[in-house]
Image (cartoon, rainbow over all chains, first blue to last red; front, side, top):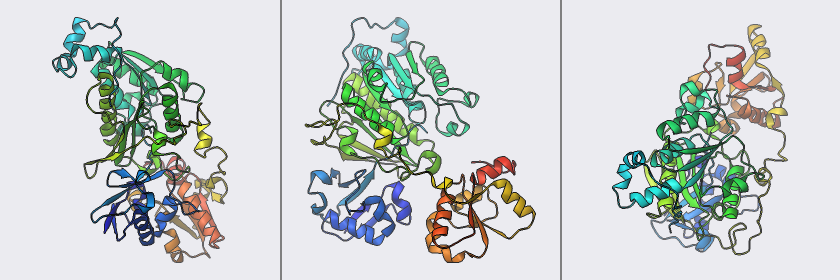
Length: 92
Length: 389
């Protein structure tokens, strides 16, 4: 099982859960499992072609998956997947 | 990886300054040499709001010699919950004037350079060239990309902080060997997907936490001390009081700081963020009713069904005795509504309820209207005793 950390802008689509458990062997599998459990999340993470949106980064523990094997990155028991979207607030 | 500004030979500290900064001077990590570097440093703060407030206050206190501030906004009553450089007496005043007064009061030795302007592709490069470090305290994506690109193009580090509700991010971008903002986020989210502070709310202390982290990183860069956040993304979770760190890498294919750069000048950032050419806001295209018209109908005891699409905690602040179905729940609960009745949907300002009306019309409801201006307009024009929030 891996834990997927949900950032606060997206928690409204996971019934306010900050962390979701998914059974998966790869990052891609974990993300599919996540949107299967919480379908409203899909359009915020993936575009119409099924690709991860460019303003969302996915980390396995503290490494950006783009610099590992991307969606094929293998997961070990206890790995944490973090979804890190860009946020802009600061002056308002 | 640290960057230090060189000490310019003509910078000296008076006896008063030496006394003022004594707590810095007695630490070997700062000392006279470090304090002179601070005095010689020129830092540009973009924004004198949530992040800019603590950032500028602490940089002034620390003895940064020249502080530029870019802000064209005016102090609003709702700013006081978190923009601590401004006080109640400043409401209605230019943020620049309010900030300048407080900063000079803390440190009269400060050379303050105000810029009452919007940062644009036309002025950013010239402006950045006059400073050593840029601190980004803005609140929108187009400006963040503009600041990033201008920092890379002028070779100035970008001390970055951003906040949302109760979470924040901080890093240092655009150092010589480090990543830039685009290495992390090549593209912005489409407009409307990520709410602003006015729409999502923000814990008042949060810009304080993140702004002081930015001030800390700025000072470390000037002194050439410690390990900067360049190459790291600090994630702050104020509710859990957890600080996490993610590794950031320079993207070799980054269009602005990578090996084969395609962006060599500033672009139209509003267009990049999809704001230009956007469709007319939903509020402008759905059938609507004004608050005055609704009041007339209610006084005449017409059969009007008021649908409130706000959240339960908003309903508690004030309400029109409407039937509460938060917007995100509407698709699941549409069967609770009677399409034969005249329905007026409202939210706080008219945006969410316009989406509700659009959805219901597409679902076959013919007599559903948006309350223009929402419950805020009702409080302004019909019932001044009702609180605004």
